[in-house]
Image 1 (cartoon, rainbow, N blue to C red):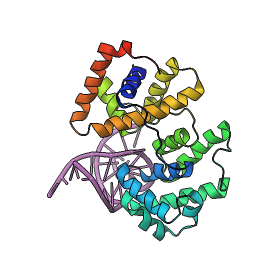
Image 2: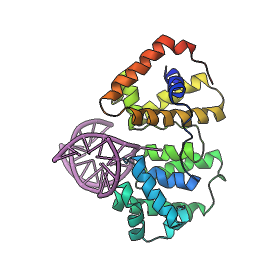
Image 3: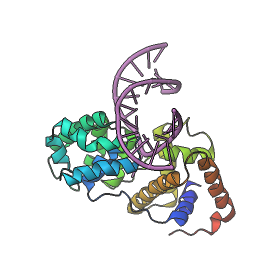
Image 4: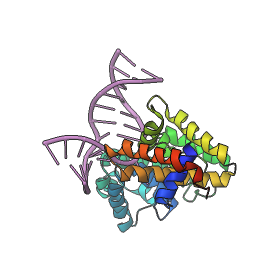
Length: 227
DNA sequence: ACCCAGGTGGCCC
DNA sequence: GGGCCACATGGG
C-alpha cells in the first residue's frame, strides 16, 4: 500500500533531488534550521551563512553565538537555534574532527545517531534526516507531513509513535525492495515526495487530495510500474 | 489580523 | 508516558 502510494507520488511529481544543498555539512546545519520552519526561511539563513563563508561545521563551532544569531535570524527561533547549532558543531569537531563525513563505517554511524539524540536540539526526525541524507543509511524520516499523509490514507497516525510509524514505512518498502542501496534511494525520494505533496496542498485541501490520490491508487495502482 | 511552517525540550500530572 | 507550552521569522 505505502509502496504504491510512493509510486503514485513519484509518477505525479517526479524526482525531487533531495536534500537541496551544496554539501553534506550544509545538510546537517539545514536539518536543524528547518525545525518547525518553512524551508523558504531556512534558505535565507543558509544564504547568509554562505555570504559570510561560514556554512560549515568548523566555522559555526568557532563563531560567537551572537554572530550566528544575526545570520540565522530569518529561520526563526534564532536564539535557541544559534545556541544549539553551535553546541552541535562543537560536539562534532571535538569528537570527530573536521572531515569525518564519508569516513565512518555503519557501526559508527548508527552509534552517532544515539549521540546526536543526546545533543540538545536534535530529536528523532533531525537525527534520522542526517542519517538518510548525509550518511545515506536506510532510515525513513517521519515528519508532520508523513503523519498527515498516513492519517488521511489510513486513519489515526496520532496514536502511533515516531518509531512505530517509521517501522511501518520501512517494513512495507523493505517487503518490496531487498536491495539496501536502492532502499536508501526510495526512502530519500519518498520523504521528499511526501513533503512536496504537503507543500502543494496546504490546509483543508490536504486530506481531500490524499484521498483522491488513494482513490487513484485503487483504480489504477495496479498499472503503475516499478521504476 | 490571523494561521502555518520539512520539531524539540521543559514542565506538569 | 501523554498533554501543553515557549521558541520567532516570513509568507499567504
